[in-house]
Structure formats: structure tokens, C-alpha cells
Image 1 (tube, one colour):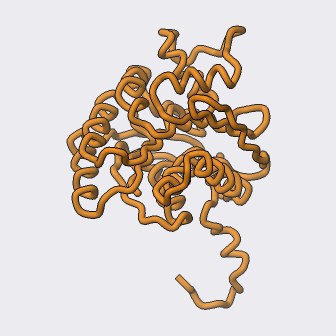
Image 2 (cartoon, helix red, strand yellow; image 1 turned 120 degrees about the vertical axis):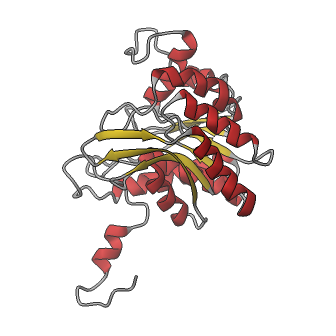
Length: 280
């Protein structure tokens, strides 16, 4: 499993969240870093973009030796990075499942995809995606770019309903679309295969911790595709594991939004007697 994404120094989202999700799904995780962020639970204070040639080299190194069963794409940042990822994907075997999480804004509100990169994402990567997994604001933003509207514009009276939005994102090229439910009134993911809209119900956990939930969802989905699940079943599994990870999230960490816990770290700590030897 390969994650092409940015690093989160706080360990809650990005590459770090992806590797935890891969481990939880029983797959070996590999990485191609697109950006190094300085961030914690409160916010992002600095972003360093990885040179495009280094991104391509990372993908080439792991694919030529270990092989890639599926790809998850997360934070990209700039148009140059989007272009580099497109070049790297061209070197993978045809038919490799690709899950694209169009990361635009961090949980803290920091912008993680430049407005100038959004058109490149639509042109170069969405048509290659097996599954695209935007949240509701990201789906609206993608549609706004296609319409030629200003980035960051608030939804208007003519904002499309979810079924129309799904079809609009699907028309941008991915084979399947999942609009995740974290930003919806009810925590319901919606799956679209080009013909049928399927709701994937879930619970909302206001006392949980959600930082990294989108990364976890898309990584689980990609891992399940690597295992051979059909896209809808993979989306159902991703919904369940991401939801559980929010429920069990480490809300006590830091002063801001705590990270999800897909590996059951809190449960493992509580189950181990204080005088027990270290089992790690």
C-alpha cells in the first residue's frame, strides 16, 4: 500500500494517520511524502513542499522493488506537486486502485491546497481516481472550480443537493465517489457509482476526536480495495473504522482537536496493568 501525502508532525493526520490505518487493515504501508508540515492539535505553522522530482523518485523506488497494490493520495499543496504525482502514477501498472482524498483544509482551518492547484487536481488526478472521497466542503469546492467561481465562496441558495453534488463530482472523472458525512447534518456517507446513490449510515461522536478522520477513511478504503473488496464494501468498511477511530479518539492530547485512534491505543493502555512489563 502506498500513501502519497503530506506529513503531520503531530502524528494525527497525513502520512502518519495513513500508516496507522494501513497497519489496522493488515497491509504494509509505504510512503511518498509531498510536503512536510509543522503542526500540532491547534494548527499548522509551516509547510515545506517536497521537490517534484523527489516525489516521483519515492514512488519509483518502492514500486520498482516492492510493488504497489493500491494508492491513497492525500495532501498535495501545489500545482507542481499535482503534476509530479500524475507523472508518478503513469509508472504504476494499469488498473492499480487509486483513492483520491482531495485534502484542501486542515481540521484546524489551515489551507492545504492552493487555489491555483485545484484546477490541476481536477484535470490531472480526478480522472485517474478509482474512488474520490471529498467531504462536503471539498465537494462543493471542486464544483465551484469547475463552474469558475471564486475559491472559498460560501454555498448559495442554488447550492446543489447531495445527489446532484455526487453526480457533478463523478462527472469530473472518478469511477466512484464517496462524499463523507463528517460535515453533514447527519453523519451519513453517500456513495455513487455513476448510476445508484447509496447512503452509508454512521453515528456522530461529539465527545470523540476527529483529527485525521478523513485520512483514516480514505486509507482504509484503499487498503480494502487492495484486499479485493468491491468499492461499495470498501466504503462501508472505511466508514465503520473511521467512525470507530473518532469514537475512540485521543481527545486528551493537546489543546486542540485530538487525533483519531484507529489502532486502539487508548484501549490497549487501559487494558495493561500498571506493573506489567513492556510488551512492545
